[in-house]
Length: 404
Ligand SMILES: [Zn+2]
Image 1: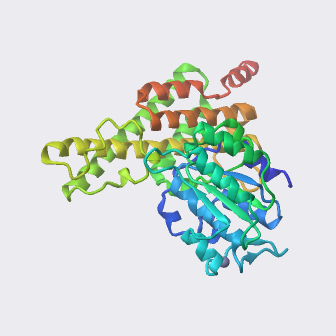
Image 2 (image 1 turned 90 degrees about the horizontal axis):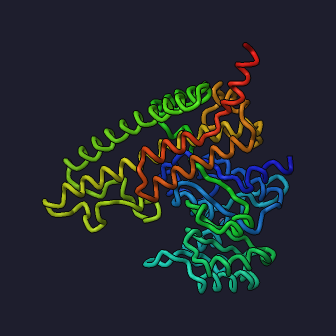
Image 3 (image 1 turned 135 degrees about the vertical axis):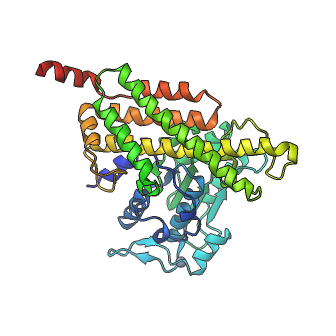
């Protein structure tokens, strides 16, 4: 199975269930990252077999989840007493030696970090030039040079083109890691030169039973569709019902929190890239707004909480669409279903081609991105996406016809 992991890594957009960030924050080595992380085991297998790539693109819904992965890989490469595989290849760091500690503190001379500039949120060509210069130097003390670009989708065009040159002819003993929660914003030429690894978080285990039950109903409806548009609208209805619930819950949660005293709601976490960009109520109205502004601030907090919930919920659906795709591929090593063993999954997969199953993932990812980044009308966006899904109805209809 030499090629299987690469097939999983390359090119395709992996869908997600939203990761709950906390699990990552304390992570200091691969062993601290969630065990169900397919991406982590893929990286460790590459390390064990000495098949590490020159350039990686780490993607996932939660940008905060990607840095610990990058840091763990950097530490493993630069660790003085790494944990080793049976064949002697480093597969994890010790997290104690001076190499590890300096990677953590950002002072290791062989690790070069690039982040968007704080005001403009842009990665500039000068930053990329510095990075390239640095990684072409001989390592100071470690066997590797490591470059890490946080929020790589913030590269401006010039910077992206400069990076492309480096990616085309990377120095040996060098690993570049690009981290992005929005890889669709990267140049395709950059993406195609990186091994893409997705970190989806804990999968369905992070969802409550109620949400999993909802996805099951949705899955069954999708797998049963026979009558085209009518069935599609039943699917849309099911989504809208769920979103109405999510909105009620968001409202109840924020109101409960605010009666205890307004504080920074968790829905408004730091890091502008995870925020809904189209928040109508201004950022000026912090939670500590005056009495006159507090109503608007509460409204904004509810909206933010609702968007967070909607994103997680749509991610749960995408997890199932990913399962369908995996089922179509005849699931490979290292690929774990979010919702194992559902009949609806294999039923739908049997009616689709691999390309159709993959297209569904793209449709859903586009929907999520649209809702995250714009003020598009929710109903319209959802209708459009559901109508675009490939559900193999032609095959189903023909199958019925040929039977009777
Ligand atoms: Zn170490």
